[in-house]
Length: 319
Ligand code: MTE
Image (cartoon, rainbow, N blue to C red; front, side, top):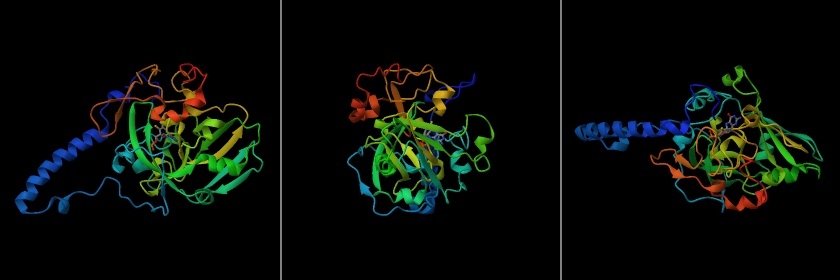
């Protein structure tokens, strides 16, 4: 996400770090291959470890999901080293390091607002509510980059059905953690903390909307939103709040962080719509992390099954 500053350059114009890292790796690899040939070692005997050590807990019993795309999955090292997580930093390469010691247990999630039973649930109780599924989703950021991630979780509707919202509930609000002691980005006012996002009830109930606690078969890394985040694959990534602590059911549309910050740039609906330009750049194309050429962006990020949620709405106005 970009905040309006004179020095801002659309990130779509910046070479993703993964690309130049790949180039560096390639160049280093060529040098290493030469050296290996000289001393007679196999390449895999001297290759460096991945950028992020994978020390996260493996999740058992994961089912595959028919919602998955079979597009090439973005490498783990890119997905975990290029993050938007302003509570830690506005620099995408910093959350991986800064979130390393972030405490994700004990962790509770408050369920309140227009529900039959307001309650505070332990995150591990939530995680056990339904069988974990792997959903390989396209995930596109409004800034113009995209990734393909094997998320692990289950449909948000599973939790909503158990929470029993009343018939008055028309929206769901997701509040994420505020803890300036652990999150250096929250010591400044770069956003109005805590980070809040929201969905209309029918959007939240759509089976594609994922309550997510893992990726690549393991517990979520901290920089990707541990212990619990949302993934709404047909919308720009900013709708997918990380580190959720409260889920509130409401009658009116919640005030959401980015829509409050820059209402002409980041709308409440945030549907991936290549026909609506961002005021400062086109949304027609995207760059998949690790790829050089841009690709055309698909309406609803390619998730046509949600189109009926918006029939009759002007998506140029409700962007
Ligand atoms: N959630 C919180 N709490 N704080 C954030 O800064 N950034 C959002 C979203 N969720 C953000 C957040 C944005 S702009 C994007 S694009 C995605 O997280 C990025 O998710 P990823 O880092 O797992 O790719």
